[in-house]
Image 1: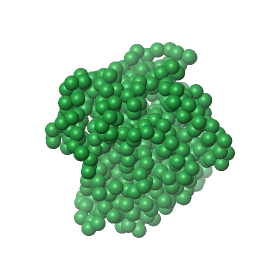
Image 2: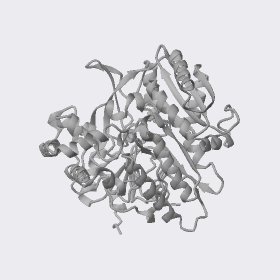
Image 3: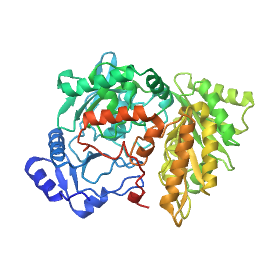
Image 4: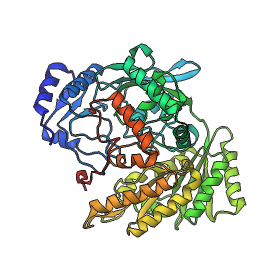
Length: 522
């Protein structure tokens, strides 16, 4: 058991920090959980006032060999925002909420913001200038920029726009040694770190087999492990670090500021809504919509539609049992593109379509997107005496294998007698699987592990990934080696050791051999 340093932490904060430090039981209990399965009580919760606070508390944690975990909105589902040492709270009451002016640089529109800026606040400022950050996760009202960078967030528009690292231009971060790095300034990067990154890069480039494997993985929407593609895409240490930080869940450094590029907001959009008889029909429709150039394609299976209806969140939908596919078209010709999608799907005759609807007004479109964004909350409490625990909720495969994935996981859920909701960003092959576990199951911990083993096994057999956009964490770490293989897993571990040799930054969330079911809070 870890020694209790709470009083020492409190004294250090009183003498050296401008922010707040909490060691009372109520606060520690509040930040012992997030939206995952876990409960881990920290020794202290610190809300920093500025970057210097972050730097000092990281140095202190290093001296005491204390784990330190950065946390934003706590909306993560894999247990990456929890820790037994210090929780560094980067929320809207911390001092890292700066939101800079929109600027023009290198033919790009850019904005600089602190990690504790809420995603929706950032989007609001951009929208007022006719812009948006295409990485737009459904958890926008809850999440913070730092958390979205940490998990390599994307959202429903990833099909066209990709994940947040595509828009991340530079970061300022505090390393495990307390050093402040600005990736836009090469002179701020310690020589040892730069040399180590270049050594890892050389090893990967000289390994043809694993370089090919990395490139193949880049074709799938993924937030699994460290972004090894950075070593193939960039040579300069600053660019590599910026790319690695996206998806690193706070294990390589703590971001104190980020500069991002923004895109022009599409002024026109239309939504083609397909009501389909079966999942097979839905998957064929998804494929046709991809071919037809839809910019976002969402799938909601029949059980999830039903749960939405009984929750009162889908009163505008017609009666009946059907699966939904939502295909968005954007740009000046959005209406024509939406009609073309309908004609393509109906004309091919490969999918049994009950009904097709085209939403063109902003009110209609927003109605469907609200339905989609509420699914997490609907499904979590949708069936009496059952709970939709976050277990396998963010898997992804190549879109061409979408139907194979759904068939495989439905067989697994059936074998375990679990009803399940299936929905997600089908155009990118990214699904949110929500098996509904009975609350009175006599061995729930073991059942959850069996389901995780079976589903992740099926996903990896299809060449898929553990996480498409929600990022790593305690829940997924034990399966990372199986996804990437021994050599690349070891390469990732060498990255961690280079940045954090004492393993104080969010340990157990990227590398773990076993699923710690004893930490589940069920």
